[in-house]
Image 1 (cartoon, rainbow, N blue to C red):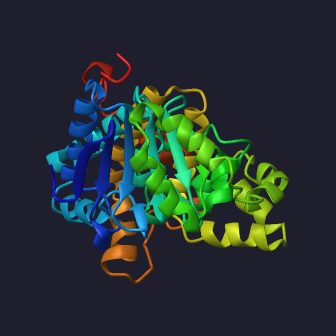
Image 2: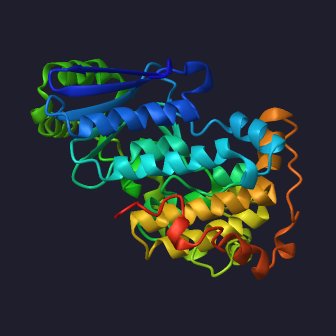
Length: 360
């Protein structure tokens, strides 16, 4: 195990605690490997009837992948020649698949920041996934902000959100709270912050085989309130159904509402090329299963590092912190269909794809 992933088994429950608070539990390759090894072992262990994923800090479950690592490795060696980058994304996406189809109750306590890669390890699949949000949950898929795209299965879970809500989240990268997360179908239960001690006590006292039912009964007594996105649903569905990103932004520009202007302002700072790639990705993801979505994302992440957009985004927002990314191309008007199509060209034949075994 890595020092940042703590595990224990008690009362039939396997507890995984992410403990890298200074980095908001950003995932390193060692952490991905520790999570995979633990969940694989527990999958066939009769002593573990349920799994709880939590954080040692209330500030974040997981803020995503370790983007400083991406930058350090990616600037030394192009993606195609970096075994560390190749391994990270291949193993992270395989972990996302493992979690989505985990055969035992998989409880994710989505407290604090849960973004990007954090969403990938929180989104257990239907039937066994139990996702709990609270008052301080900050949920987002903000990859376009650093010149990437919503990965870790985002092409599946965003494209299956109601209406155009997933497209809204993917293109703007904006953050939502507990009520919106429930409305989007990205969480199952809400627990207010002041009830968290009682929640933890319940988990500690409940046998693993009874945990799912006990949590459902406990959480049924709480209401997250109205979802702000519900009030904007018609506007989101109208604007974000435009056939192009330029069309989306034109529709937002013509809408003087504060909501539309906030979305437009966010999109004006994002990578023009990766917004276009994201739009196409979410459209394709809507008709693919989880395995094929992850394989498609694995293709795209190789192309994104080859292009270099993500390295520039991380430089501007995290390394130099000048907040002035030099996007390539710099404007939406300069993005061509051929540029977008290039991202969807498979780097590998199907028979040698790094994730070819998913779903087999």
